[in-house]
Amino acid sequence: MKKNSIFAPVDMTEGQPVKQIVKFTIPMLLGNVAQQLYNTADSIIVGRFVGDNALAAVGSAGPLLNLMLVLFMGIAVGASIMVSQYFGARKREELSKTIGASITLTAIASLFIMIVGPLITRPILELLGTPDSIIDWCTSYLWIIFIGILGGGFYNIMSGILRGLGDSVSALIYLLVATVLNIALDLVFVAYLGLGVSGVALATVLAQFVSAFLSMRKLTQMSDVFDFKKEYLIPDKYYTGSLIKLGLPSGVTQAIFSMSMIVVQNLTNTFGAQYIAANVIVMRVDGFVMLPAFSFGSAMTTFAGQNIGAGKMERVEKGATSGTLAAMGISAVLSLLILIFGRFIMSIFTSTEELITLSYNMMRILIIGYIAMEVTQCLSGIMRGAGDTTTPMWISMFSSIIMRVPMAYIFVNLTKTPELPQGNCYMMQLSMLVTWTLGAFITFVMYKVGRWKTKAIK
Image (cartoon, rainbow, N blue to C red; front, side):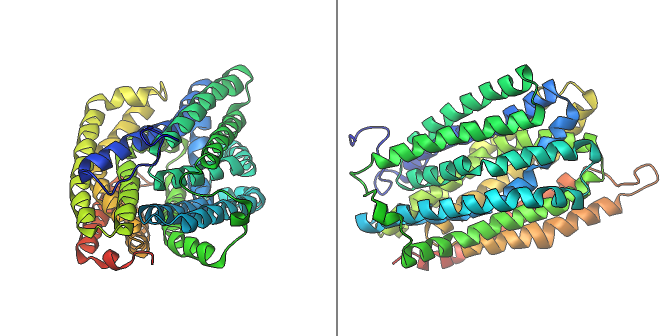
């Protein structure tokens, strides 16, 4: 592998911080766009070829699916932190053992989800009061995704390792290939073969296996950076424990967020199938607007990890400031575009005028919150890269459980009238806006407190 190749690991300990962060973020941002296209293509195709109920079914599966994926989230975060710090410190053997442990943990997590996922799907959907008109479709979608989870799980972990090594380009290329394949298979399975929601799930599973295979092959070719040996796949107590210790808080954070979404989903279901469908549209568009936050956040984790591993704390703080400001600027532009072209964007998903208006009004409420999320994700990324994964976890617990869930129910109940017996549905978005803004403020305060500076891996 040539050192000047765009596919070579990037050393983020040299050069101007903001340029390195933006350079590393761009492929990740494009990759996240491609990742979002998975869900968006699914929604557009089922919405157009099957109907609004199918669109609602795919969206209703989201919270439960995300809850089951927290295992991969934890492993990926732990691996990214350890890989970036060991890479920055030039510790080859430690890096090799970390990657081996990550692969083994991913295989175990995949097996667990393949067994447990299908067993709990229907009971949980019934518990949440999922409408009868969509529950069968929602169940079949989740069953297929859970049984075929191995591909998606391994891609997420492998791409996290590649990013920790500073290679965000390879992960992008493999994801683009899988995304194109996913859209093509969606059209074949749904539009041509008429498999409906099940066809969408099958297309996603097959495409994820392709991206996982390509990512694994890439890692086996990086012998100049680390050693990919069978003996490193045998669980090592220290490295496995470190991965779990670092990744668990992030996994718990995602689990908390997913559980709060499940609880809120129960409230969402009371507004009926049309609101559920509109909420799906909002989540899909929302996913694209959120991409700069998640991309910069992941880039900040790698940047902080490599520089802390190299003992350059002042550089980390400089990058945190400039990177966060850059992310906020991008988010502001995207928010403006949503305000201008929002109705047209919503019309891509459905031709139902009521859904277009409802989803557009929901998006308008969330606009300012997207900028706040940049602060949360970027500064949380810095803290995670330093090894402090517990602070973002506590912030998420406070904002998602103590604030978001009660606030959503309180706001909705306060707006109940004879004309609106279920309450004002827009209160759901208002509670989310307040939560995001408060979370950004708390994250900024905790970053300035500086506890994260003492958490580097020894």
